[in-house]
Amino acid sequence: MKSSLLAWLLIAVSVIAEVVGTVALKHSDGFSKLFPSGAAAACYALAIWLMAVAMRQLEMGITYAVWAASGTAATALVGIAFYGEQMGYVKALGLVCVVAGVVMLNLGGQR
Image (cartoon, rainbow, N blue to C red; front, side, top):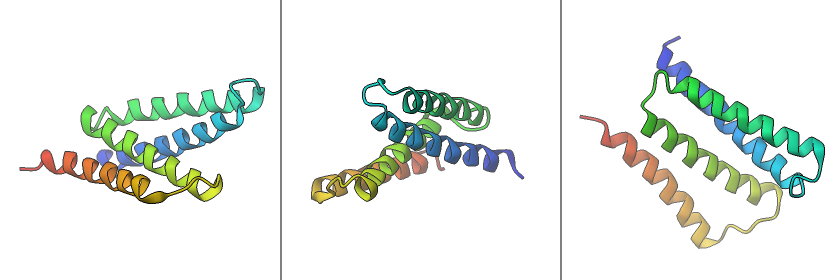
């Protein structure tokens, strides 16, 4: 397997860990519940570590942009799908802008 492909897979797992950590954070009730609080901290630590390992092969700016945008979009979609959050036109436009921004950053490095 190519090392850059492995790095992108690490970013994907990192995003999943971040989203799981955010869901745990919601359930931690302001860090007053032990298990969700510990799960949130562990998931965030894992997410950052995986992203750091991936940055051995990938550019920092693109890596962080993809990680942050993917995590933001995935967390918003989890909120809509599982927590009854409303989509609305503004949120939908925001998600489109997040995805478009990451695409533009990736294309900006192409020559």
